[in-house]
Amino acid sequence: MRKIIVIFILSLNLFGYNELEFDSIDAKFTQTIKSQNQTINYSGLVVIDSKLGAFWQYQTPTTKLIYFRENRVTIIEPELEQAIITSLKNSPDITQILKNAKKLTDNKFQAQYDDIIYNITMQNNSPKLISYEDKLGNQITIEFTQIIKNKPIDKGLLTPKIPANYDIISN
Image 1 (cartoon, one colour):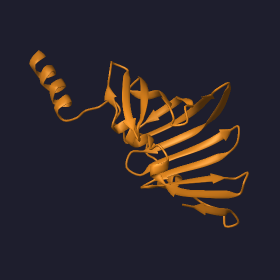
Image 2: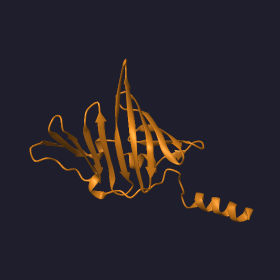
Image 3: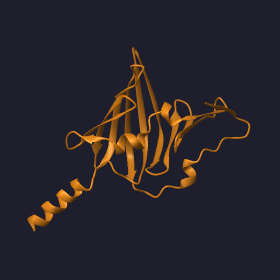
Image 4: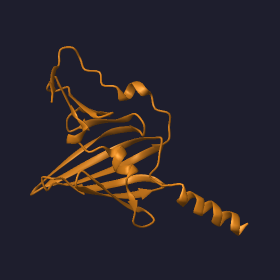
């Protein structure tokens, strides 16, 4: 019996098993940005599909909808009645960050993406906390709560719906 367990564990390592692998994640988040003497807190919902992309719905302090799909990011800002469409190279891709993370300890991982180091804390086999310093020197922490892993995701949720009267800015 012990040999079977050892072989199973070794085969997981050989075939690339990673606690950060997932089909989908659905969670609430709180994002804290510390810059010099200021702290800003954001909160909302996030849905991530490992193959199709991610949707971040910022609810406070202002509403903002951010869609990551293929190589594009679409940011919809209802208060400004505008949508910004840009390439993914200008924004961090959480799916790639999690997929490329390397295990440091039982619940600590680290990933490098676009010259930024992301520290990831796991809890119950799901990402609980991501912290990093952006290129402007801001300290950013994203904490996830009410995490549901591998729940079927409505694919329409990952598709931006830009109202016809919004200004569209693309680059």
